[in-house]
Structures are given as structure tokens and as C-alpha cells.
Image (cartoon, helix red, strand yellow):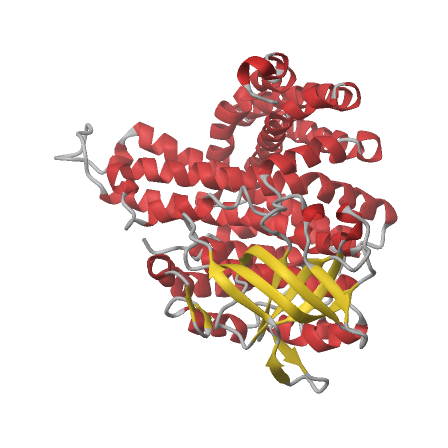
Length: 588
């Protein structure tokens, strides 16, 4: 299957659904809407012509740990150099550090294309983007001058080092130590696991951002500091010196993303420098994690798009069964159930894409708007949509990849097919950057109560306005979609009211419905954007107009139609396992 960059759908999502035109011109002086299509087209060429052809070969070969360090699969280093030469790493980075200063949401869109073509490759620049953001926000001037120019150019890559064998998602349990050396640096000692692209041969240096504890630091997350630790020491003049005391001592054996080295990193008195304030490292790291959560959501979108394209191509070629009007065995695309499955895949991917880009535009507005009310509204929208974009979109990626395997039938269960690889690759995304269960807890535990519940109430009000706009067209198909959307909005309103009260009075009961609540919220907000797509698509000509109406209509009669029935699963779903815990589980 040849990956085709979905430039038209991405551009439509950015312009007509996420409304990138709302970004302030003063903050992005070198950006206008006419840049979107050519940037996406060029990124699409890199994705389709350079990265996609390496995807299956990279999966088969995998990254290799040698005596000299980790070696990327054949062709990856050359592809990464093309990525660097194209200036893609610095697309949204500050001009001050060599970047192009364009909206971050546009960089998000480019990353979707890269993930769709080759998720293993895309993980490397994704981690570098987070390192850049953390150093821009929290690094000292000296640290910024030393590391940012080469990170922004892509000549060096970055990593995020949080997890340890005993800690998992409980970052407060980490034990890596940072002891002052007396010269402003610290000796970092400890072991980190699951470090994506923690070592490789594609760049001359790797800049690690590492969480560690200072001597006598408070227990738990309040005693964590952040340090910048280069793989190769950087001299005052910017040239490289000797190797630092950090190395990869093992590669994790994973079910997917084989071309992306997931490293066990050992720090043995490695030289590091404090980023931000002492014992405030978790707040600094969250700058990286929030960026990464949205980008992980886009992994779900990208892999889902690739799974759809792969399944669609196979459905056109694979002949089986008889269909009226077709001589001999018919391509399985003629079978209604296959077309239903493909439509499910495409509708879910488009809805997830719109949620992610809406979150990205909100993040850009929250950072750059000069209007206080708009800035606060954007901040609330970003906070609300981040866990939904991460969790709902990555679940979509897995579900769509699963459907892709199903369309391939027995062939989809064979490792040599791209459908199987995409399913394996997609499965990590719901685990990355705080599992989807953690995202659901964040949504109901923090985001629903922000500003007195304003974030979700404003979101639901927009959903209802979209339903009203669709109904006012008097187009029978759009009126039917509007009815489904309005009913779904009512269901989300009911579930939200219950959840807010439950989290106050019966927290365990509220948490028992958190994942189901996030699923409902994603369905309703995704349906909102697809309904918007049908409305905005009326201004378009050609296939785009019909496609958006068809996707909105299908989503309305499937996912949105189910929304009212999901409320009891949220409000009552936990009753059995909470009340009968002794019968179900050994909790001793």
C-alpha cells in the first residue's frame, strides 16, 4: 500500500473546523492561510516518498543495540537527514532559536503525516519537540543558548526520562539521584526505563531531560527536580567534547514500533544541569507531557488514517463472493458490510483529527492571544480537550487498526502485512504519556470542576449551537443529524451533572464511570465537529462536500444514536463491582 497524505482532509480540519484563522496575526507574522496547503503538500511528499517505504522494513529489522550504542534500521538515518534539511523540526519553534515561528498546530498537522507514514520514525522528532518546549519555558539563558539552536535545527534530538522500574506512572516514587558537584553541575545516578529513542545513530548528540532527586529532597512528587543531561558534553564554544556517563544498557522487546528504540538508560554519575527551580521538576516536565499528550493523540489519528487507506486498497483488490452486476468474484468493496466498516474507520479518524486540531488551536490561542477573555476561554478549552484528544483519539487509532485487520481477513493476521503492523504499533499510544484511564481521571477529577464547570458547559453550549445551525438549514439530512447531535448533547449534559456531584460526594463511584464518561464526551464532541464539517462542506465543491455529509450522517446514526444509552453505563456501571468487590476481587 502506498501511503497517500490526506492533505485535503487535514487542511479542511485546520481551516473550517479548528478555525486556525482565529490565531492573532501579530503573534505569527510569517503565517497566513495560504501557507497551509503547500506546507502540508511538502510534508506529505516526505511522508509518502521517504518515510512510508521504510515503515515495514524498519519493523522487520528493528533497532539494534551494539557495542557502540543503538543503531537505527537501514535508511532511517538518511531519512532523518532529509527531515532536518527540510527544516521540519523548527517549524513552530521560536525564531530566536532558529525556528520558523509558525503555529504549533501546523507542526501538529505535519506530525500527523509523519506518524501516518512511519510511527516509529515520528516518535523521535515528537520527543525533541517536547524537549524544545521545556527548555524554552524553563531553561536558563545559558542552557537555551547551549542546546536550543541544535535541537531546533534537528541536528540534535531530545528525550524525556521519567519512568523507573519501581515507579511506573507514579513519578513521585522515582529514586534517581542528583548530587551537586560544586561547580554548578550535578552527578546524575540511576536507571530509567521505556525511554523512546534514548540512544541512536541518527544525530551527533542527544539531549536528555531527566527527573531526579536532590539530597534531602521532600518525599513524593514535591521532591523532584529536572535536569538537562547531554549524551555528549557540549563545550562553551558549542563544540562537542567527551561522552557523558550515560548509556543505553538494553532495548525493550515490544509487540510493535520495532524500529523505534525503547531504551533502558543508565546514568552513572552523568553530568547534568538543573532546569528551573529545585523540587519543581514535575511542573517543568508537564510542559513536555502536555505537548506530548496532544501529539500522541495525533499518533492515533495518523495510524488510523494509514489503517483506513491500507484496508481500502485491499478491499479494492481482494475478490471474494458474488455481487449482482459483477461478473465472477467481486472485489470485497462491493459488499455492504465492508463499506460500512470502512465508513466507520474514516468517520472516526476525521472526528479524532478535528478534536486534536481544535485542541491545538486552543493551545496556540492560550499562549498568544492578547484578548484576556479569549485567552482564558482558550486555556479552558485546551485543558478540557487535552485528555480527550489523547485518550479518545488513541482509542480510535487502535479500534480503526483492528477493523483494518478484520477487512484483511486471515491475511490481516499475518505479520508480513502492513495491517498487522499498524495494529501492533497503534496499541502503545493509549499507554503513552499517562494511560487513557489516567486521562479519564484527569478529565472528571480536574477538568470538569475548572472555573466552576465552565469548560465543559461552554463546550456543550457549542455542540447545541451546531445542532441548531444544522436544523436551520432545513436540509432533511442535516436536520436528522441535528436531532441526533442534540440528543447526544443532552446525554452528555446529564452525565456531566451526575459526574460533578459524584466526584464531590462519592468519588469512588465517580471514578468508576470516568472512562465511560470520556468515551461519551469524545463521541459527542467528535459528532459536533463532524456536523460542523457537513455544514462547512456545503461551501465546498466536489467530493469533499459529499464526503463530509456522508461521514457526519453515518456517525450520527451510529455513535451519536448510542449516546443516550451510554449514560447508565456511567452513572450505574460501577454499582456491581463496587458493591460486590469481595465476591469479584481479592482486595486483601
